[in-house]
Length: 152
Image (tube, rainbow, N blue to C red):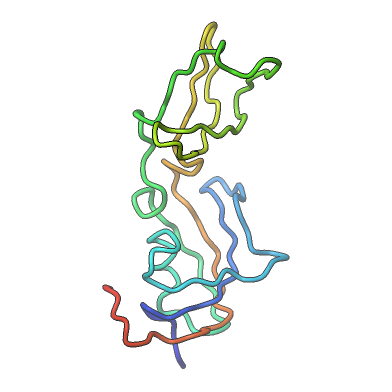
């Protein structure tokens, strides 16, 4: 039986959970996720979890923090003055916002804490610092690797 290898384009159904069982994403009710193994389109641990699966096979994998979104970085916590928020906007913990850096590029942040005169914004990925669990099912191998050689 053909199994998924580095460089193959595959379609995968998945259910992503935290270690406490909380679901953070799932392909249920949607088209399966299509990506090329080893291309950097998905996190490293997800790539590794799909390798070796045959069509129709299922597997549950645990992805450590380092192979997921990495550890939380304290330098991505930004203290922002409350008086610089748009008038009428009431900041709340958990609120998702977009900021712009000096080059004008937008990046997402979440309000982590509200202080008297400022708000602490968290620029970390929401899943940074978390171990992830995925239930995977290989639906299809769309295309096998071509002459392109990707590192294992």
